[in-house]
Length: 90
Image: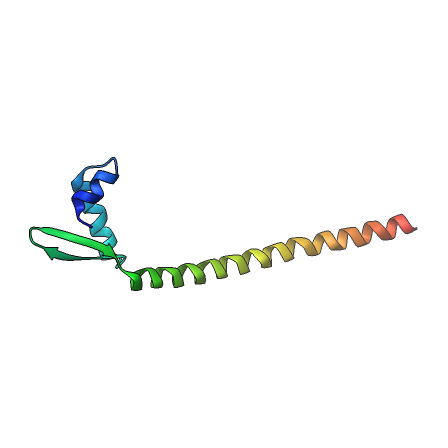
């Protein structure tokens, strides 16, 4: 898709779209090719595959860490409940 076509879809200028596309290209998320006096951009599937792998790893680690923290906070509660139940039984 050409920059002009993209710019029509967003409330920003063509130069702003070009700057965003440059960043996306540097991140390997889009590729471009010359077509006459225009540059045509398209998504780069391999760039998105790499991004997906990163986020899967990131979220896997984040969720594991969250789970460990939840388990830590549940242990003192379990001890408190057991202690409370003993007192109530006496």
